[in-house]
Every structure is written in C-alpha cells, then in structure tokens.
Length: 149
Image (cartoon, rainbow, N blue to C red; front, side, top):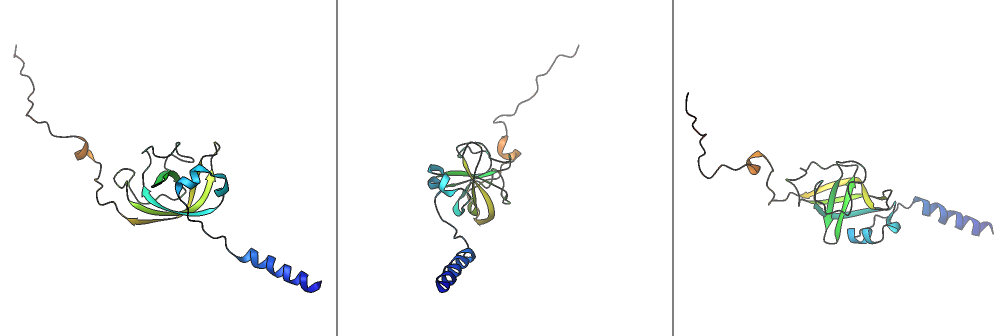
C-alpha cells in the first residue's frame, strides 16, 4: 500500500511539473467554439491587420489600441503587446502571436499576447501620408479677378 501511494504521489508531482503545451490552432477554430480554448496558451501565425480594418467580428475587447490578426480562417483581436507596426501602412505584415485566449463580456474571444514576432514586413504596403491623400490638381486653378473700384 505504501508503494502504491508513493507511485501515485510521484505521478501527481510529475504532472504538476510538466508545462502546459502550447496549442497551434486556426483563428476559425477559436471563433467557432471559444469555450474550450479559454485560458489556453496558443500560437497563431497570420497577417497583421491594424486597428480598424473591420475583419474581427466585434470592436476592440480592451483598449482602442488593440489590433487584429488574420489567417485564412478568420480574424481576431490581440491585446497587451503592441508590435512596432503602423496601424495602416504595415497591414499584411506576417506576424506570430503567442498568448492566452480570453473571452470578453459577450463571450467573444481575443488573444492576450505574451509574445509577438514580426516575421516579415509587407513589401507591397505604402505609407499613408499627406502626399498619398491629396493630389495635385489636373489643371492650374487661378483665383477669380475682381474689379478694382
């Protein structure tokens, strides 16, 4: 009996020492059935989608600075770590996010990032600036001349 108790105690202690394995799933899996993933560590690779692209099912879960990641199955918000990427110019940049799945008050899942890696900048992105928003007029415009009294 002592021996059985010692073996069971050893197995229990060994189980406590084994670190929880990071799961690698798709965003679509998480969005479809979020409850089994809640509080689980996951790793997702996908495209950085900035703050306001509207690809995630709801608005930001924690702050207005939360950002979105998209893979071929869906889009989800990420919070806690903000990569050094522009909210618009770097959309499409490949990133890897490791974090914990959380559910907001409406049971919508999001990722609380523990690590964010930039895998490669989007080569086709163009910076958004004044020169990209305003264009030169096609023909010269002159102010109307007013008669001098």
